[in-house]
Image (cartoon, rainbow, N blue to C red; front, side, top):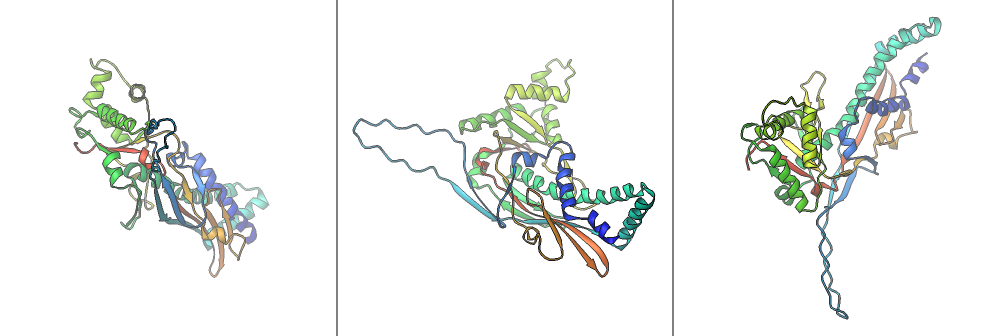
Length: 354
């Protein structure tokens, strides 16, 4: 029956679960919306960043005169080796025996133990899928809130890939007039309005704001916002009501990104989108979530291991060993977001005073 057991732990089945888990998680992860998945070859990422700037007017030229030559708009090419992320699950001897027994009972008695056994197993697989899918979202939230990708780990070390430069920091990174934590004197509506207007002066139309729930609370609890929408204090305005008022007044949509993750099982919750900042985004995608070629993809169809690759490029391998008997399922992704529209993204730091 071992062959039957291994059929349940196949690379295509695990790959299907990984794709299904992202859909069943509820609202699709924002990172994949802002950076749609894209397959690229190899493990190196290069992209050209640009900006939706104001047009330069053509100069008047007299008839029969030579037409002046203008310089090409400057651009910058960014390159980086993409990091690799991997997780694995092991179906060891004890679990294999339990699953074997469940399959035997199911075959002989039509026993529902099989259903329970498989559910227990696929809980682990869903956990693996969630880990793989969550990392690109973390990369996306990091880059739109800081201008760099921070790959944090449970060991305390972190890899940083910087997308921003001094010009972006000087022009696109803003600070609040008063820290939003001082809700009696802060002016978050004015701060937001100023950033939107500054972007418009640069030729960029802001259509979305991203913040987490704690930052949102500072916004709606500020005296400025309360006086604007409830000056007498006699109205009962819900959170969605404040959101509607602000969106209508500012001409934008507000996205509250409050999902959390852990670096280890049982570890502390951490926010995908950090406290203290607001991201101002133009319409459409900001770049691509680029998945490189994994060794698992290269080995697909070769050797004893069974390999599968999801449409995005997550490599799934299932390797069976004989001493001791075990099956190891691994998910590997080489991934990094490109960020062609970084110069059209603005970040407001609400923790400091301008």
